[in-house]
Image (cartoon, rainbow, N blue to C red; front, side):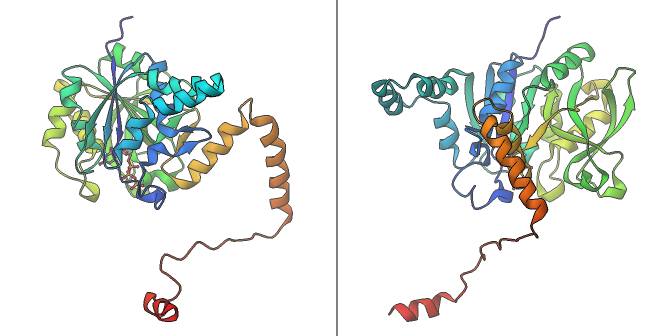
Length: 323
Ligand code: UTP
C-alpha cells in the first residue's frame, strides 16, 4: 500500500503558561522527560512512522529547540577527547534524527494559526501534525494506524481517546458514528473544550492529526474562536460538515499510553512511568517507588506550601532595612 504522507508538522510555539515559571525562557517542549526533551520523543515518533521531513513551528525562545537538533561542536570535541562514545552517540543522535525545517509563528494566535504557518512547506498533500508537548508511548501503535486509515479512506484523520466525563472540558470533543471497523469512527461534529453537559461524547481529540490540504483553505477562513485563538478544532468541525469537498473527518480511537507533558501532573507521571520501565533506571527506581508509596499510605498527608507569587514584605520596607 502506498503511503502518500511524507511530512510531519510539529507546532511548538505555545506560551506554556501552565508551566510557568519553568517556561519563561524555554519552550515547554524542551522540558526533559527523564533525559530527553519532550520534543525529541515526538520527532522520534514521526520518524518511526516513516515521516522524515519534519517542520517545526516555533515561537519565542526558539533557540533552545533549534540548538537541540543542531550540532554542538564544542561538546562533541570534549566527549571525543574523553573517549565518552556512549554520550557522544546520544548527542549526535538528535542531530541526525530527521530532515528538520523551521517556521516562525510570530504571535501565538492558536493551534489553527500555527498549522496554517506550515502551508508553504507542505503544499497540496496530506500531512501529519504531532503536538510537541504530547507524548505517545513508543510501545503503543497510533500514528502508523492513522496513516493507514488516511490512506484507505482518503479523509482527514484525528486521534481520539476516551476520557472521564469530568475531564472533557479540557479537550476538543467529537460526535461519532461507527464505521464497522474496530476503533475507527466517522466524526459528525466537533466542539472545542465543551462544558460537560454540552459534550457530544467523551471522545477527546489528542495531539495527533493527519490532515488533508483543504485544511489550509478552511483555516484561512476560520475566525478566532475560544480564547480569541484560531482553533484547529473549529476548522475540523467545518471539514466534518463539508465532506463533499474536504473528504470529511475520521477518528482513530487510541487506547494506549499518552502523556500530556504540558500539564504539570501528567508531566510528573510521564517521568515516573517511563523511568520505571527503563532498563538503566527501573531496577533502582521501582523498589524506591514501592517504599515511597508505602510511606505515603502510613503517614498523614503533608502539604508543602507553594512559594508566594508576591514577596512576603512590600519591596519598599525591604529596601528600608538595607539602607
Ligand atoms: P496548548 O493548548 O497546550 O497551549 O498547545 P499552550 O499555550 O502551549 O500552553 P498553556 O495552555 O498556556 O500552558 C498545544 C500545542 O500547540 C502549540 C503548543 O506549543 C503545543 O504544542 N501551539 C499552541 C502553538 O504552536 N501555537 C499556538 O498559538 C498555540
